[in-house]
Amino acid sequence: MIPAAQAAAEAHGFLSPSGVEIAFLLVGLVTLGAAVVTVTTRQLVHAALWLVVALGGLAVEYLLLTAEFIAWVQVLIYVGSVVVLLLFGLMLTKAPIGRSPDADSGNRPVALGVALAAAVALVWVVVDAFRTTWIDLDGAVQGSTEVTGATLFKHWVLPFEALSVLLLAALVGAIVLSRKKEQER
Amino acid sequence: MHLAYPAVLAALLFCVGVYGVLARRNAILVLMSVELMLNAVNLNLVAFDVWLRDTLHAGQALTLFTIAIAAAEIGIGLAIVLMVHRNRGTSDIDRLRDTAEPPQPWDTATEDGATTDDTPTGEKAEATA
Image (tube, rainbow over all chains, first blue to last red; front, side, top):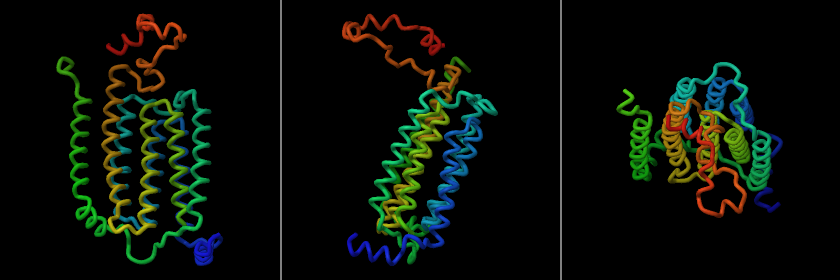
């Protein structure tokens, strides 16, 4: 271990996690468990409701990382609209209420193998790369609404406007796709 | 906070999303898994933005852009799924195999396209109904 990393490890310590780290770990476990239930449950509506738990847990993680504005945007857009859209989609496609035996396709073992291999590889690489890196959460808040708004409208105006055009195009596209044809009315 | 906590959580969430995309059969459940993967990326962006103390806050701006694009994606995706369900009566992606290439032996596949005409036309007739 290089001296700087050793000094950092001594300053923070592996075996004495701070309160923020413990909170992050607990909320992360809840989030991960909700995500796993989302992709494994056989009840389609329950999958959407567990997705709310996973996305809400992620919003709490953003708050713990001091990204306040992102957290509220996450709650508003994901929990508020995306999950509602998904529930509407489930209802409109006449998804069965209760257990549906064919929620998982036949390539489930292959999918499990791919996901486990990817998880092992990614976690190994990430832990090996960031073993001696700490986030300094003290000092000025990184993601308050004021800071995010200032940087967004000072440095990111052009991508922001392009994104609004993209959202408009997506809106028009969704309306055109879901409209019935003339003779069907 | 140790940077490994958010990074490992994001990696695991991404892998859960990968499993869902590969293993689910209903198209809307696949869209949910895609949302999980996008959220894993968002968590990485926020964590690295806070770690690097970027003066432009590129991570948080890109997180907002990702959220907006995910909203557009879910709108378009649901419109497509609803249209497929209206036309075919199913949103089961294992049964939407119209563009799948029929399994052929190699010697006939290299000849002209006349061999592709003997595919079962029942599903295609259902597609145009």
